[in-house]
Image (cartoon, rainbow, N blue to C red; front, side, top):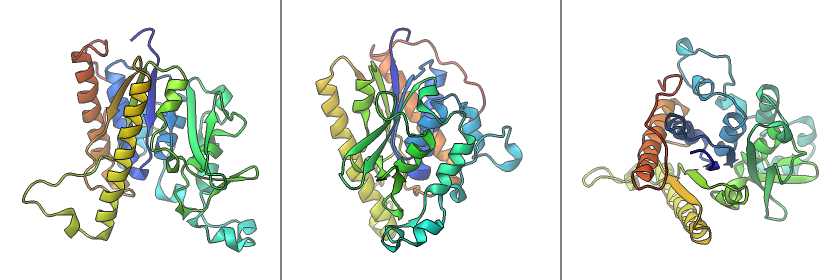
Length: 307
């Protein structure tokens, strides 16, 4: 793959975003090395860690059983995300009611544990998206855009799911989850000069086999999750198709693992999520090679196990 610039574009999806790590493991085994990383929400966390050199095995280690861990890397648990209000926020009741939790706790954790908190110092091009809640515009952090905001703050802004988290303030502006504006910002990868764009989309809806219990009989939360996945998948698919038509010289590979009915907060399904991303990516990338769209060598074992 010498001479080609490869981009990884990761969707959000909270705990379901663990499937991104499986997609990246498949890329490693096939010798596909992204140098451009674009992400929102969960995809922003993956881009801001793996994209600046945190080994994949270190990221995977956070989700292994305690007695199986081999590294002292970051541990992103539920407690890392959900914070209480600061004294200043308590004095602003309107803002206090704009979400249930504060995302400040995640920002502080990332600021302490990221190898570098400056976009200018990152070895790869990392782009993180958010949305300005007051002008409804997409905001992009990273090289070629806003590089003055620390990486930890950009990721925190990108992870602000509306209603769950209060909008994250950077300067005098308030921000929400980057996927509100666009499900996937693959256009940023194209603008960054990518020849191959690997889109890791975890919003693929579950499909029920004939005779199995319908999603409609699994409760309101499952129905809502399925509906959200349908809407976001169709939105992502149309965006990628439009980009492919506009940029025929760029190869777009849409990796959409079947996550099934795993919930957005079910981090206990980590191994299943990673393996589904890994297997789907191997099939998608190998199929592209077999059709002559990609040229890379035989599969090679990557360092570290997936279990």
